[in-house]
Length: 162
Image (cartoon, rainbow, N blue to C red):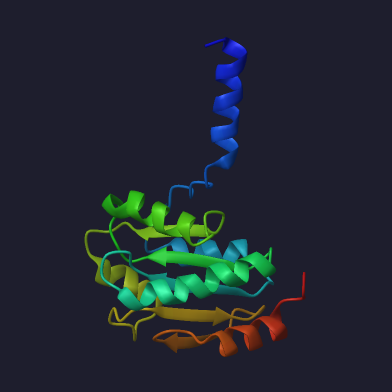
């Protein structure tokens, strides 16, 4: 096989493969403040999910992936409550749902309760859970699966069409 043919085949394979999701960043007790700083003066969605312990989370992530196709600048931050050991499964899941370019974090603390408390002292770990932050970072809490209707209404109010 000639080198030219080999490089051609490798190029075709590289461009036809789905984009792999980035490694999730480690989420610590200070991470929410860093996320808020990143989105200073802008609304964003903080979605808490698990690849390991939440069957309903996939339905919600499927909706997010669908919306990410039409809202190229979807202000979405995903935080998995799994451990960093689940990063490969998380990446595979997110890539399959079209969320490979979304900000992704994973709990990185031996005591997950500390991280839950840093996000919301009234949260005891139920998933999925979503926080809809406006531009002033006042938030609405959604416990359970976020409906498409509610998410679209929030986007219409807080995110210009793109």
